[in-house]
Length: 260
Image 1 (cartoon, one colour):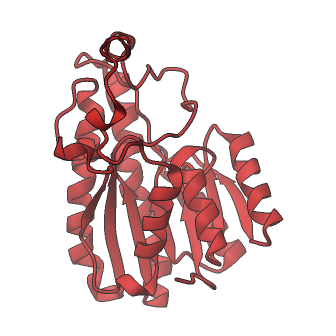
Image 2 (cartoon, one colour):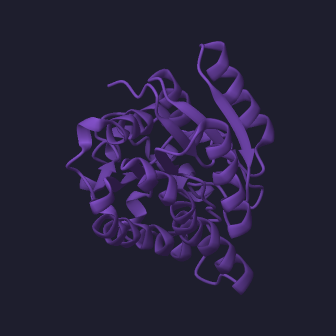
Image 3 (cartoon, one colour):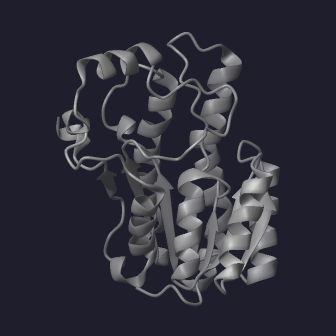
């Protein structure tokens, strides 16, 4: 499944899922633009690891909540690499606040997680149309399928990504551009990138689970949570020419945890 000659832009590529996706795209032969906002050191580390393995990468800073910065990012990638063939919309903000978000927290999550995806797509589509080829992969979440008990607004953004994917898939199909979404479950991504983020599992629940000595299979049938490489493998498949006939799909990638 070679991606040789393809040009990929991955947002949020300095940490977690984005870093794993960028590394694997480069392993498959793509030139990779590493979009980042606050994770400067992480983006540099991703680039270093790609170049050590003989790949080609560039870093480009942009706040995906700001259209001007998104447009400048896309233009810089196109100028340096000659266009954009693959967009992986991954940069996201997860605050894990209760229902009572204030207006600022609400707007920031919506502007990054949903509006940011839409505007990143707008920025790269002209380059894809020019080539008659494009692969857009929106990283969503299983929380776009089922309710959560820890962040209503985050789940709202992920539900919106599903319809953004479906509607744009219809509109862009005639240009040879596919749009698909991946809905990961729990992914081991290490330390979170924002100091505002609360623990993914509330301490009281973690303590209760520990006290009850529940096996991890109680929640994860395959015996583990996901890894960035699990998401990256699926991204590479969707980004390849082997998926020409797949568009508008939302693929759940959670090791079966949603079945329980």
